[in-house]
Structures are given as C-alpha cells and as structure tokens.
Length: 241
Image (cartoon, rainbow, N blue to C red; front, side):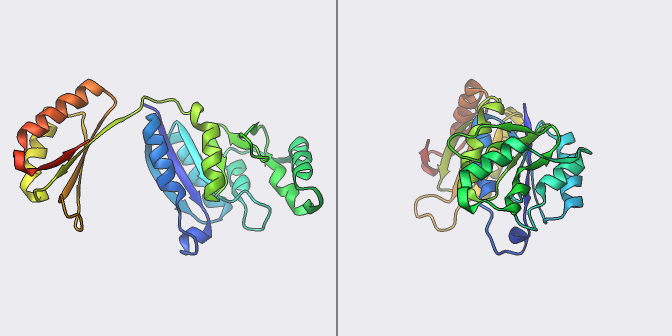
C-alpha cells in the first residue's frame, strides 16, 4: 500500500505560538483514501534540517507532504531546503512571478518574487480556484501552513495519492478496558491483519471504551466484527456503527 510522511515546518509550531491542525486533517484524509501515513515530524525553519528530513522522507515513503514556509518573509525557507535536499539550484519562475503580480496588483513588491523562486524542475500545477499553484518536487508536495489554504491545496493532490480505502467499524463498550483485554488479544490471534484500536473514555455516560476495527477488505472486517461481538458479553455492548 502507498505510504506517506508529513513534514510540519515552522518555529511557530515548536514554540507553541500556533497550534498545528494540519496534521490531524491530513491523517484523516489519507486514511480515507487508503494511504498509510507512517510519520509526522515537526521541524524548525532551518534550511539544513529541512533538506535532511525531506531527503530522508522522500527516500522512505511513496509520498511526502510539507506544510509551511513558502511565503515572502525571512523565515520562509522551505523551497531552499527542498532544493538543497535534491541538489537543485533555485530559479525564478517567470510565469509564476507574472501570475503573482497579476493576482496581487498594486500590492506586488520585490519580496513576492521569493514566492516564485523554485527548485529547478519543480512541477507547477493548477490548484482549484486558488491563485497560487501547487508546487511539487519529485515525490514531495509543498503546501502552505495556513490551515484553510492547506486543506484546499490537499484537494489538488488527492487524486494523485492512489490507495485502497480503509473501512472502519466502531464498537462502544460499557465494560472497562481491562475486562475486555483478553478478548481483544484472542481476536488478533484469529485476525492477524486486523487494525484494532482500543480507546478508554472517561467522561462518557454510556460507554467506557471505544473499539475501532479497520481493514481494506470489507469481508474480512465483517468476519472480525462478528467474532468480536460473539466474544463480548451481550450486556457490555452499547452501540455498533
């Protein structure tokens, strides 16, 4: 199955000034389309660190997504880091620069040329109704850090990240986690490929544990769910969906 790594770039995330909401969004979206997100890493606005991590993730995963660091200011160095990761020079994309100038009008200034300075050979793709295009280099998609823009940009790459969707079933259990642990262990012996999660809930009035069962094979998942329900005491099951 296709794999992905996510690189969150920004001193503001590491300092706690800004809360990262792009990671949970991306994790959920990739899960829906069947791409395994295997790593999320947050790093500072440092060219050498960006280059090292981009190079490593590009080697380790089928797809890499980055967020942040593509604006016009001094701390926007993601393009520099990506260029260094692949030993590429940075070059002004004249067509993109003209596009930025046209979109910003009287607000265009010299600092905005930085946003059109890309690693040589970078792929520039349309991005829905957004005026700034999607930029990618090799298997690395370079997205903005602003959540609303990040989410819109992701829609532009969604179709390029082919996978087999993962099917999810939930079981809400009234018993304590310790009371059902042995049943879960037995289930995993029978269904070794099942992705099984067990999450205690403290403040829920109707159940104490949320169980999640996931698989790309619907038939396999249905059999695992049936086996789990047969193992659990009838009075311990609050809801199944």
